[in-house]
Image (cartoon, rainbow, N blue to C red):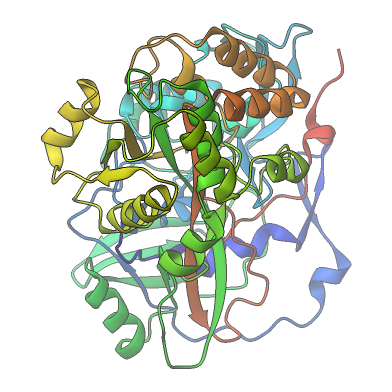
Length: 501
């Protein structure tokens, strides 16, 4: 996904709620923190941002990355999460969790949509149901059995397995029930997207329900069209755009500030269990030692990615660096395994989608690493449907894959017999059971990760990041989070909002 993303929009606004308001759980809103009255940096007279006019703004179906970064300005979820994957309540005021962690009940804030109508439980139910079938968030609902609004104004979600961290999955935009299929439904965020004779723009809601202070004072933010990498950089350099975001570092001469934000894209190797080479348990479990992940990050991403020895983001609270060290780069371990199995000079097929230049470069680098250990690597010229067919028919020994892991780092799609990332359809009972145990108790992630690495059929590589370029001094409190570069909270914590049984 080597393309520029117009994140200017999100940048300007979402940082504001982070510290200026203090939440009062019993009052249903905010009071002003005296510290917030301190002088604030003067805002620019005009903020100019970009979007893709050919892309969609539909929050449940759009895959256009240029426009998805506008959505947190327009919509809010029950929860949000920060760069460390710590969830914080937004539209959820309080919630209960059953003792078996299979039933959650959410009580809502007295929030309003941009037209002034009150948020209801039926809006939440309809929004989550639409997200479930819309495609973009579909993977979040793997273990959700039912979503129901109740007569007391709460929303009840039932699961098929215990889940300790369901709030991490519920940053999904909430819109009006009657508009879930509209191209641009109304939301509860600080801005509304409108159209005039001059084009699209964001208009500030004067009566935003949470009364949070936003450092950008613009009442309207004009949006300018740009889709290609060149267009985005031209807008930034020559048209006064506020921010640009890329999926890798770019040399740029100018007065700017630079941030990194992990984006959830997980790159990995997966083994064909029927392969002559990787059906060997010793070879498969030693594969992790053949990969110099730090070199991939440095040379291919210019440092804007996170080496991931374990199958979770290194920013995730339950990523164990101690465990990761046991499975890190050591070429000799893999070379010895190949030698002892008498598999030197064996040919393997390393499958990669040729439509993705970054993954191709990663595949070429990995091929060199494997050949240094004695294997002969072929990378076929396949793309599009041919690539999908090659995966389905297991015409590979290894493939370079990429997926967006859910925020709770659920791996069941890899190890469930019918999981959509289990292309070999080979049951892995031990790993699947540990996936469920990790969902029930986050303390089990280390056991799951150890099992995955010892089994070896999934070999993590890295998590991709965005490089964010902003006008110097324009975003002094920027704290980017995944899918929410200008993350903000409302001053609440999960502990504040959880109702004890």
